[in-house]
Length: 71
Ligand SMILES: [Fe+2]
Image (cartoon, rainbow, N blue to C red):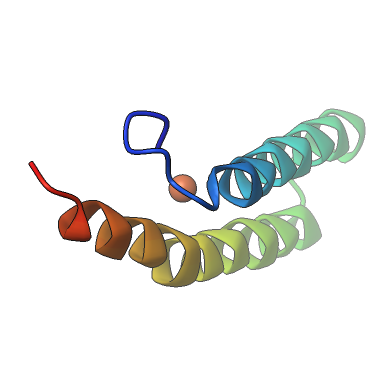
């Protein structure tokens, strides 16, 4: 993103940071409550939700940008 001066670099990075915060929250929840079925459901919802949205939207836009750049 830096090499090609990607215009949405900050927005993209912000989503990565948000995901890292989400993982940190899940880590604390796992530590405090253990690997309960509810915890597993929350992991599924939060992690797959983020990955689905980020990969399908944000990473796809980045890919389109990169493919449009001169080599
Ligand atoms: Fe990304």
